[in-house]
Image (cartoon, rainbow, N blue to C red):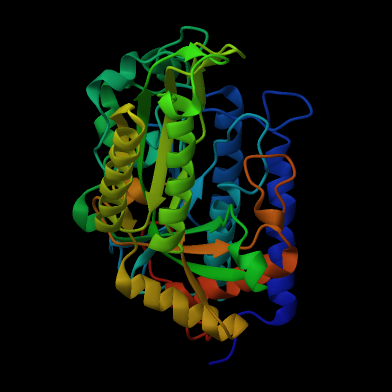
Length: 428
C-alpha cells in the first residue's frame, strides 16, 4: 500500500506540527518557561487557538463542561460514532513543549489529510485537547478525560490550589458551571475507540534506533512506606556481631529489590527513592530506617507477585538481623492494557512506515488510563531525545513526527486517497 502522504506532504505536515508546538509553548504563565495549568487564562487561550485550527479543517468545535476543547469531523453518515484522537494541553511546571501537545497537533494532521482530499470516513473523527492530565494545579490528575467518562468525584470541586482557589471557583472564573460537570460525559455509543500519540518519555526507542513504537499497556503502580526497626547503640562499643542495625537491613533489602526486579521482567521496574535513618547521628547505630518503594509494570498479576516476594524478603532479612519490618501501601493504580486490535493496527501501520516495530509498555500515566474504563484505547510512542520529558530540553525530530503522522493516518484507516463527495450535516 502506498503512503497516504507524499514525502513532501509529510514533511510539511510535520513542520506545521513543530511550529504549532512552538506557538503553544509561548502561551505560559511563567516568562522564559512553559507552565500552563488547568483553567488558567493560558489554558483558555490555548483552547481558543486550537479551536481555531480545528475550524479551519471544517470541524464543529466546542469546549465541554470540564474545559476540554473538542472538534468533530463528521463521518459519511451524520451522528456516526466517533474515533476519538488526542492528548492533553496542560503542562507541568517548567515543562517541555511536546508532552501532550504533540498528540493533539498530529491528530489535527489526520483530519487535515481528510479535509484536503475532501474525504469522509464511515466513522466520525473527533480530536480532543484534554484540559488536565498532569494534575499540576489541584493535585488531581486526568480531570479532562475523567470528565468525558463520568468518573468525576463530587469532592473534587472543593479541592483547592496553592492560592486557596477551589476547582469550583476556577470553573466559574473560566465561564464553566460547576453544577454542569456531568454535561461533559459522553455516551457509550458516541465513541468507538480512543487513539493517543505521545512522546515516549523514556530511552527505549532511541536505544533501538527507531522513531516509533506501539504501546502495549500503561504500567500499573504500587507505592509503599516501609520501616525497618532495630536497636540504636553506641557506634564504638557494640560489637558487629551483636548489632541490630536497621539501616544495614534496609541496605541489604534495597540490593535485593534491585536484583529480584531485574530477574522478574524487563518491563517491570522498582525504585527506592526516599530513605531516612534515625537517630541519624554519626556515632550511633541506626535504630530505625524508613524508606519508600515504588514498583511498576504492565501486568497486575506480575506486580503483585513481585511485591509479595519483596516483602517476604524484607521480613527474612529482618529476622536474620534481629530487625522488625513493616510496610504500608499508600498508592495503587492498576495496569491499563491497550486494546489488542488497536495494538495490531498500530503495529501494521508502523511496520509500513519504518519497517520494524518495537512493542513496549508506558511507564508514565496518560489520559488513555481514564478512557480505557469506557472505550478501547491504542497508543503510539514517538522517540524523544535522551528520553527526556517534563523538562525544557524535551525534544523530538521533525523526521520522526513525519513518520508518526503517516502511521497515524494508516492506523485510523485512511486507505484510499481518491476524493469523495462530502455529505450534508454537522461539520460539513
